[in-house]
Length: 127
Image (tube, rainbow, N blue to C red; front, top):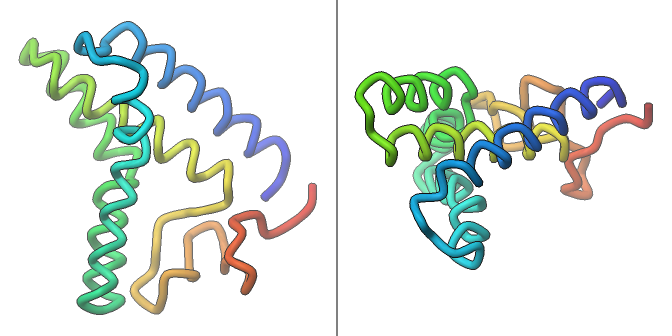
């Protein structure tokens, strides 16, 4: 992925994490570390098949859904919804830095950012 796109995703990740510090629900940093990685549980959908796996992964990694959840939390004064949306957004931006994009139903390695390399690393191209 090109460096400029990675920098943009890094800025979004940092902004999201900053907002999470403002809406931390009073939880310890040690709780937030596994929570930050929790959206990856959605990969369990791949145990069913690639279509279900792509769907579940994309629901938990779609920035539009994350923004909608955060906005709903803001408008309905629900700190949990707001924080959940911020967490999903930050995690998704972090994944994009690593080269992981939204999935196609043809396989986990087929993403909207291109095909993941065989080594499993997210980065596809040197910028």
